[in-house]
Length: 135
Image 1 (cartoon, helix red, strand yellow):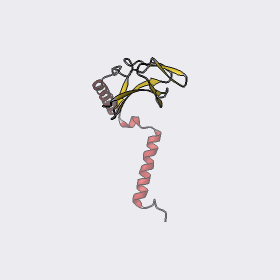
Image 2 (cartoon, rainbow, N blue to C red):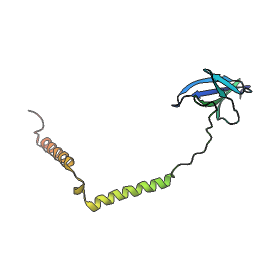
Image 3 (cartoon, rainbow, N blue to C red):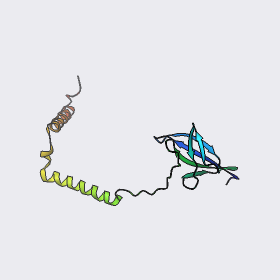
Image 4 (tube, rainbow, N blue to C red):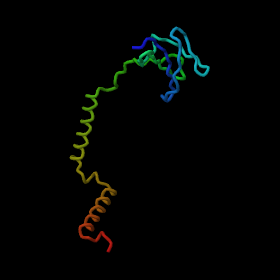
């Protein structure tokens, strides 16, 4: 715990890349960066603390295109619970396996797969007989 607390505004661009950190007084209403005013709202903005021996630094987050501090405490519910997603994924896998068993593997083969299998078999035969290596 430091003896003094210093307030900074960390400014980020639209792509989420860090631009700079700008100091501002605790009791001011705004601070400026490149002739753009940013509002100071200590109660509403999200922050993190860096502790030091003499000074504690409190960093508030700002987007370069918005003058108000960012609020990162918003709770976000997932679209689908992980258990439901896993059950749905397992069901899809089982359906695919059952479809292959019903129709048979031969119906799933196409011309390219047959040619690839024949090439692999021919290369294997040539390698086993010793005819693959040049003499």
